Figure 1 (cartoon, rainbow, N blue to C red):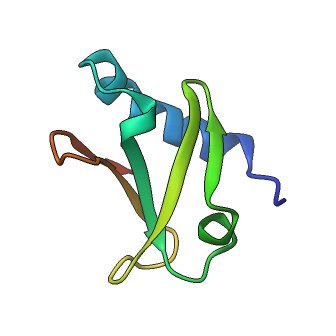
Figure 2: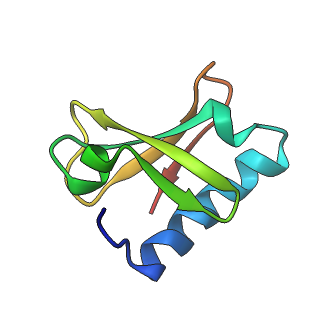
Length: 79
Protein backbone atom coordinates (compact mmCIF):
# COMPACT_ATOMS: atom_id res chain seq x y z
CA UNK A 1 0.00 0.00 0.00
CA UNK A 2 1.42 3.37 -0.97
CA UNK A 3 1.79 6.24 1.47
CA UNK A 4 -0.10 9.33 0.37
CA UNK A 5 1.43 12.64 1.36
CA UNK A 6 -0.30 14.57 4.15
CA UNK A 7 -0.64 17.53 1.74
CA UNK A 8 -2.58 15.37 -0.73
CA UNK A 9 -4.86 14.11 2.04
CA UNK A 10 -5.55 17.71 3.13
CA UNK A 11 -6.45 18.63 -0.47
CA UNK A 12 -8.83 15.68 -0.71
CA UNK A 13 -10.38 16.47 2.69
CA UNK A 14 -10.85 20.12 1.71
CA UNK A 15 -12.56 19.10 -1.54
CA UNK A 16 -14.73 16.51 0.25
CA UNK A 17 -15.91 18.86 3.02
CA UNK A 18 -18.58 20.76 0.98
CA UNK A 19 -20.02 17.52 -0.38
CA UNK A 20 -20.20 15.91 3.07
CA UNK A 21 -21.64 19.08 4.65
CA UNK A 22 -24.34 19.21 1.96
CA UNK A 23 -25.50 15.75 3.00
CA UNK A 24 -23.59 13.43 0.68
CA UNK A 25 -22.50 10.15 2.23
CA UNK A 26 -18.81 9.19 1.81
CA UNK A 27 -19.97 5.74 0.65
CA UNK A 28 -21.67 7.35 -2.36
CA UNK A 29 -18.73 9.54 -3.39
CA UNK A 30 -15.78 8.48 -5.51
CA UNK A 31 -12.58 10.18 -6.61
CA UNK A 32 -11.73 9.87 -10.29
CA UNK A 33 -8.00 10.11 -11.03
CA UNK A 34 -5.57 9.38 -13.87
CA UNK A 35 -5.53 5.78 -15.03
CA UNK A 36 -2.40 3.82 -14.16
CA UNK A 37 -1.54 5.76 -11.01
CA UNK A 38 -0.73 4.00 -7.76
CA UNK A 39 -3.72 5.64 -6.11
CA UNK A 40 -6.08 4.16 -8.71
CA UNK A 41 -4.41 0.77 -8.36
CA UNK A 42 -4.85 1.02 -4.57
CA UNK A 43 -8.58 1.59 -5.10
CA UNK A 44 -9.26 3.76 -2.04
CA UNK A 45 -7.81 6.40 0.25
CA UNK A 46 -8.49 7.01 3.95
CA UNK A 47 -9.79 10.55 4.56
CA UNK A 48 -11.00 12.57 7.52
CA UNK A 49 -14.53 11.49 6.56
CA UNK A 50 -13.80 7.78 6.01
CA UNK A 51 -12.66 5.57 3.18
CA UNK A 52 -13.03 7.13 -0.28
CA UNK A 53 -13.17 4.96 -3.41
CA UNK A 54 -10.75 5.84 -6.20
CA UNK A 55 -11.46 4.95 -9.83
CA UNK A 56 -9.65 5.58 -13.10
CA UNK A 57 -10.79 8.31 -15.45
CA UNK A 58 -10.08 8.10 -19.16
CA UNK A 59 -9.21 11.73 -19.82
CA UNK A 60 -7.84 12.78 -16.44
CA UNK A 61 -4.21 13.98 -16.63
CA UNK A 62 -1.72 12.85 -13.97
CA UNK A 63 -1.81 15.12 -10.93
CA UNK A 64 -5.50 15.93 -11.32
CA UNK A 65 -8.60 14.30 -9.88
CA UNK A 66 -12.22 15.09 -9.15
CA UNK A 67 -14.85 13.93 -6.69
CA UNK A 68 -18.32 12.96 -7.81
CA UNK A 69 -21.33 11.48 -6.08
CA UNK A 70 -22.42 8.20 -7.66
CA UNK A 71 -25.85 9.60 -8.49
CA UNK A 72 -24.21 12.69 -10.03
CA UNK A 73 -25.72 15.03 -7.47
CA UNK A 74 -22.46 16.59 -6.39
CA UNK A 75 -19.15 17.38 -8.08
CA UNK A 76 -15.94 19.17 -7.09
CA UNK A 77 -12.38 19.33 -8.42
CA UNK A 78 -9.43 18.38 -6.20
CA UNK A 79 -6.91 21.19 -6.71
